[in-house]
Image (tube, rainbow, N blue to C red; front, side):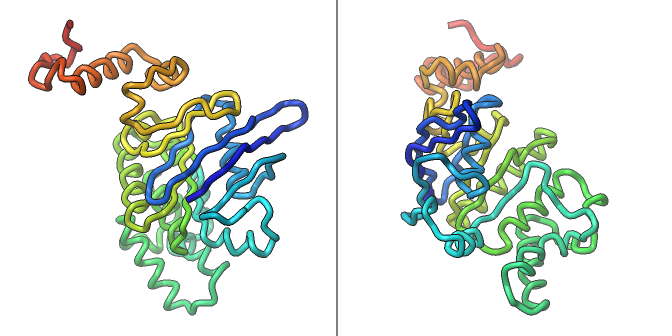
Length: 272
């Protein structure tokens, strides 16, 4: 669990985080959403220690990260996995070498033991046999899976993902979402995801923080979004007429006003 209380972060005279508080739950996919400039990227950077908040506190399973000594932070960071927006693979290293990189940095295991662990995580992300390939030789979806394998190779307790579906087609995005969700539950990880992908929000959003102008505007689950009356949230999530119609249809189904058999063959929303 990661809890943060009253986080404030400013750059010059611009306040980017303005008293944000929330709890990221263990074993769940915790999403941070919001428009560009809402503060979600700065929030994530504060949570991992890339930026220092001006005030407020951050707790990792009850331990005050904000006031930790450098050596304590270093030990904690070994329990944190990162999946970067562009995968951030080393082009000159093979898949195997990319995934092994954290093991080389943080462990003293021999090569045989490290290779065994690399093969375990590559198998888990369905990349068996890709060890000797270079990033230029694999697809965007495969690069993301290599990034996930590298992020979990040290058995992290916490996983941070920055726009994990950026640049991927919808089908591949769903595969990545499902993989992250499965790993979160399988290893009981506290997973924190920054995303603009509304499919991700609706499919794997178990604990969602919606930010507006550096503040926590709304929290809830993907199911809660359907019935939310928060005007700003609805305008952000259901921006198009198509999505507004889809929300209305989901609400009508949930309240029993229509059933799936009532829907016309052309998929249009029936008149009430």
